[in-house]
Image (cartoon, rainbow, N blue to C red; front, side, top):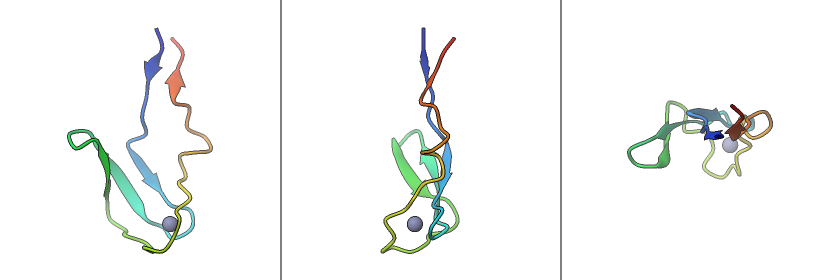
Length: 55
Ligand SMILES: [Zn+2]
């Protein structure tokens, strides 16, 4: 049975915005750095993160 894993925090490689996953709200929350509001955001988790973990 594969287990779905979600990243708990992510950082934009362009503007430095950092967010943390709020499990209760089911949404990303700004952690510390707000970054650039006009930035399209390139999250550092997309390239290396594997969404499904094999048993
Ligand atoms: Zn950004």
